[in-house]
Length: 197
Length: 238
Image: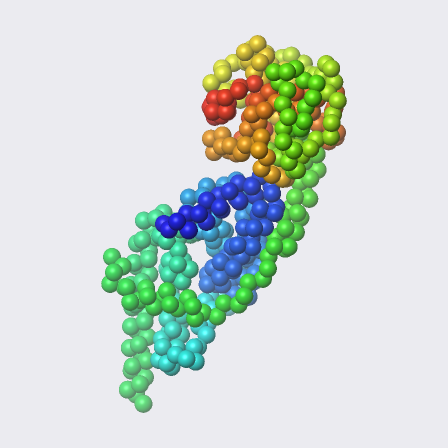
């Protein structure tokens, strides 16, 4: 852990202690600091257009739950655990509202924005990666999103997803294997289409 | 184990930068409002439940051994049912002989346990109390030790803390897994009744005090001068 990270964690601990004692100004410091990270996590975990509402609900609930914060991996993964949970709740309520069929086709990952400076091939590859992430089982997708797209450590991912650390490790390996298989299948299909022309 | 996926991992890490994530909304005002909304539904309880107020301020006319001038810092400390004012307290004339808490009566440990609406715990480090009193309809249960020099108040305090400002004389401490406040210097204590009214007739000067909350019960341990010893007593509650 770098000195700077350590300093941030210590600062968080001090601010959390004050917020826990009811200092709303202290809590606002945390809100301002972590809103962007929480929002990004909500979007990548599939909250879509409801991401801001999910984050707001999660931040209010986090305040209520501060007494349960133990500070093991810092404030961010602890908050992201609440965000992930709220996002799942959202999926459940959407499922009830829209029916299972609609939910199945709902896109749970944001689109990659094509980079005009990049090659068409690179842009296509990114699109394919997102498409195949969407096809993964929810848990496989969640662990890859946390570990690599949100760049959380194994320990922090364990906190954010509420899993044992060992599960994060094994699930990550399995999810990477599945993603690679999906990508290979997809390329194979694309290749066959190509030869048909 | 994931080494063979290094290329894929690198791709996923890079992918994060290309995803179309809209900017986040500023949540500060909305979250504050959300917290306030939930608090409003609990406010009734907040004022109906017991509060002991410890006012730390310049204290004059006190026995020399206990006299202390506390630096004036704005703010208010709260641990559950106890609020600590750390600002320049208005000069309160302490009553010469402070009244006991309202409806205070001597009782036994068993009777106090039956009367109180919260679990009454005994700190193993101090053992069974010499005297037990209950006050204000068992809102507060008080144990006396060491011929009254050490006093443990327990009160039903499920009140949410409201403010915390660090004051030079009030120290934030851990009592086991719980948070507490350590007041090393003498300070004034006043009882606040069920209606939220400060009973100034009860005002008195208290010695070193540890205040903490555990499982919705607020504890106030007075008279142990050593901070670590006080915390040890606090942790031994069971």
